Image (cartoon, rainbow, N blue to C red; front, side):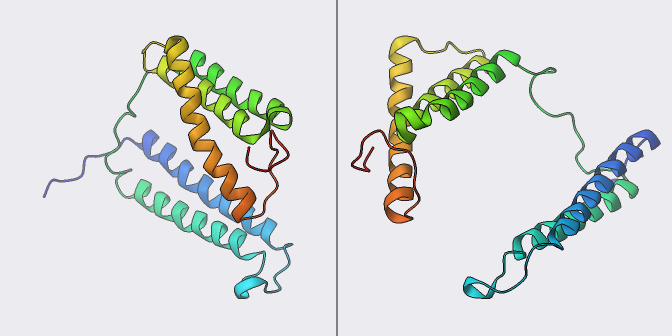
Length: 174
């Protein structure tokens, strides 16, 4: 078994701050959960169950991160893969798709809005990988793929779960 590599004090400090931040975030969630009603609802679980669970898990994870930082540093601590800097062009395409969906969903419906968002996101991800955007044929194929993903999701939400989503037609199928 190899001896652990000594981690510089500055790096241990930075890693400890990450653990302490997770603990602080968990405590902030717990503080917010105090004001949520606890009377049991469906299945005996009240509305405050999930916030308390998230708070507890954040504190536990933060504690484990802090312990690990204080006892040799994060394991397998290597540089993250990818580019050295952010790809702002790809971020712009993806953000534009999300904003377009938010702006147009009431006018064109959930399925078309999500398909358009998918087209923009795929274009941004392709550009981030240095691949060509796809041209007219690729864009049409991306739209069809987005449509085929969004249509069943729309149907499941509106028909099975009875959740209102904006549709393109009055029939409830698009």
